[in-house]
Amino acid sequence: MVKIYNDYKDRADFLTVYVREAHPTDEWQMKSNVKEDVCYAQPKTLEQRVAIANDFVQRQRYPLPFGIDDMNNAADLAYSAWPERLYVIDEHGRVAYAGGMGPFNYEPEEVRAWLAKRFGPVTQTSSATAPRP
Amino acid sequence: MSRFWKWTLGICVTLVLVAFAGLSFMAGSPKDVYGMVRYAFPHMHRGKLRAGDDAPDVRLLALDGSNHFHLRERTRSRPLVLIFGSYT
Image (cartoon, rainbow over all chains, first blue to last red; front, top):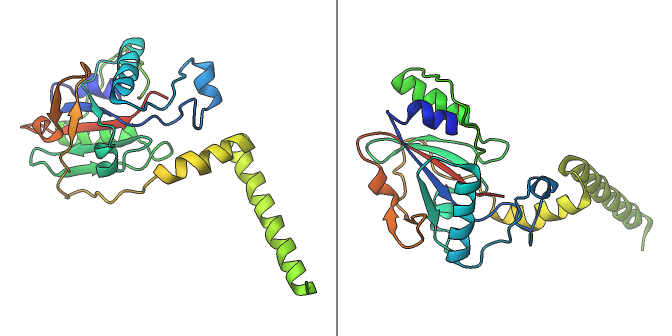
């Protein structure tokens, strides 16, 4: 998504919404989390969620604008977001693209295709390789 | 227990074990199957939002941990790409 952001940030707005952790240490931790040293317990307070979000942005040098879901998980519930999902909202506040449920149906290229259809294809060389949140 | 019910029970147990073995293979290990069933399935939802629906407005917190904003404040004169996810 960082590449798509770099390609289209002059034409569209982007917002990363941070939701509850997918593979925390106290729930379903994956081996890849240990290997990549991404080990966090499921936040029990908003402060803990904010701290992990800031860790992510700093460690991954993540350039996209950021918002954090409250502990009532309102954004997650409204958008069926967990564990990861993509949407495009048009200028009228309506859903223009609703992506599938991640991880298997999380398709950034579908967002790129939507943006390309709207604004034309854009591909710039970009060395930004920050992973998706 | 009659023979019929013994066979039925045996077949059901076998099917459960085969399903568990298959899921373990797909997920990586029996521990991952447990994690998937215990922690992932309750939170996974197909989602009801479709193209054309009004985008729900929600309140979000900025990275500074003190300022809030509404998602709809970001829908102005340009499309807004939303990327939902977490670090782990």
